[in-house]
Amino acid sequence: MGDAAPFGKGRVRKLFGLDRTGAEPAPTRAGQPLRPFTLPNLIGYLRLIGVPIFLILALSSDDGREPLAALFFFLIAGGDYVDGFLARVTGQYSRLGALMDPVIDRLTILSGIVVCWHFELLPRWLLVLLLVRELATLLLARWGLSHGVDIEVNWFGRVAVFPVMISLLLALLVDTWVATALLALGIALGVVATYLYARVGRDQIQAREAVTAAEESAQQ
Image (cartoon, rainbow, N blue to C red):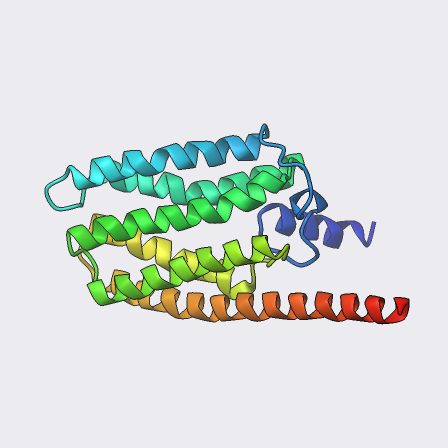
């Protein structure tokens, strides 16, 4: 009975995504089946459909601050947490979900950049920095896939999403300096995350090359 409570607390923390320690689930790894028909992936598809709807609603408004568009942005952004929660509750992890979620996150942020740029809801120089960081992340992910490297999301990457998403959402609702401050914080955290992704990917490739070289040397 003495160990039950800590185990229960740890289980709850993992279910709600508060504890991300440990290896990523095996079904999400490279080489695993895509498994497109899962409940978490359904949420992902709905998020993907919501992006163009958000853009149409926001860009059709007078000043970019359309409550319905902001609601769609909130649902799309929040859907990332929902599908992760469902995956942990149901155990329906998939390789497709692992590939799709970060892409949808990037598309969500890019759509927010488009609207905020068009209506000048946030400083454009910060939006340019955010865009560069997002494109760098996409290119890095593409590079990782082409080299068979699984680059796991690090702490900075997880945390950076929140101030960026909240900043864009706030800018879609009201004119406040808080949105600008949060965007600057999110960009700073994101840059650190991208650097760490690149370093981890480089180290994995170097380690693999070292193993290959050792095996070839042993066979000679």
